[in-house]
Image 1 (cartoon, rainbow, N blue to C red):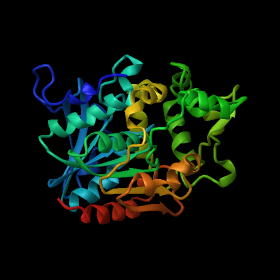
Image 2 (cartoon, helix red, strand yellow):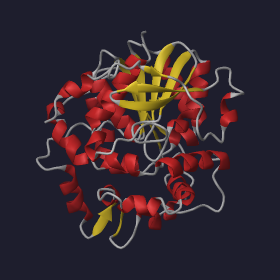
Image 3 (cartoon, rainbow, N blue to C red):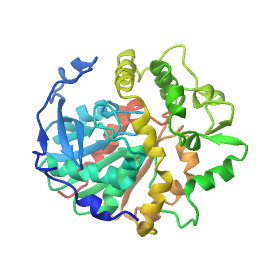
Amino acid sequence: MASCGHLSRMGTIRGKSNIAAARPLAIHPRSELGRNMAFPINHTFLDTNGIRMHVAQSGSGDLVILLHGWPELWYSWRHQMAALSAAGYHVVAPDQRGFGQSESPEPIEAFNILELTADIIGLVNALGEQRAVIVGHDWGAQVAAHCGLLRPDLFHAVALIAVPFLQRSKRGHPPTQFMKRIARDNQFYQLYFQEPGRAEQEFEQDVYLTLRKLLFSGSGDIALDQRPNYFFGKDQGLLDICVSPNELPQWLQEEDLRYFAAEFERSGFRGGLNWYRNIDKNWELTHFLIGATITQPALFIAGERDQTIVLYSNAYETLENNLPRLYKKILIPSAGHWVQQEKPVEVNKVLLDFLATLNY
């Protein structure tokens, strides 16, 4: 098991200042996003846990950190940044390790859950803060949960979106072995991601179309009979079972999609896919978390049409046991996996109501 000393590598890195000199975004088709806000979105780069991290931030006040999932960016939180900063919070949304303009180390093992968690602990320190509320969506929810588990002194409240708290399993075999058993003669998408280069080759042939398909197919707008299954034939790729819409849904404007596509065109998909390639490594590293619960005030939000709730139905049903101070668990009607983008008004209200209950 890797030492938990990884989590102490925060603050100044190799003698450098925590706050790197800000530089303009190389690609930002929607640069007008911040101009009509009371608190514009500012961009900078911070050194944390040995990497340079791109950070979007807005507002002032108590710190709220927003962690995106796959295949996303800080930009997935654009609506929440506006609402929370206007309500008096300092809102920070990084491109996580391997995404967007943040650094993407070469070794696959550099993307294990302890490194990802250390990135965010170091981010809080680089910002000069002593505590934060942590909010995570999809893979970001897993990082947020580990931040809450490992540093409750630093993260005094936790909100998880789309993916419920996945308590460390007592299972005696690595997760991918279990996945292979349930997949049988098919492919499970997380297994499809395991071979380096395979999914990258599929996704990077046409990045714009890849994201158009993935974002629409995971949303609440896709017809029930067109929803992709998590399992597909061994002669297929993931995009073969996804759908490109005739017209983009209202929540995903053309300029939004082009921003996502421009960033993934530049960075590629390798960094984000390496998160999946650490599933077994994460299981090995977190034996000490078997039975651990998140004891801080907590919130869970998901879209009613999000198939992730079906995939992790047991974790969803037992949330109250594993989050003993759960404020609410809410399924938002008509929304799919990208709930904070699909239904920003509803998500913002729930988040603000939760934040208002916290004792700062």
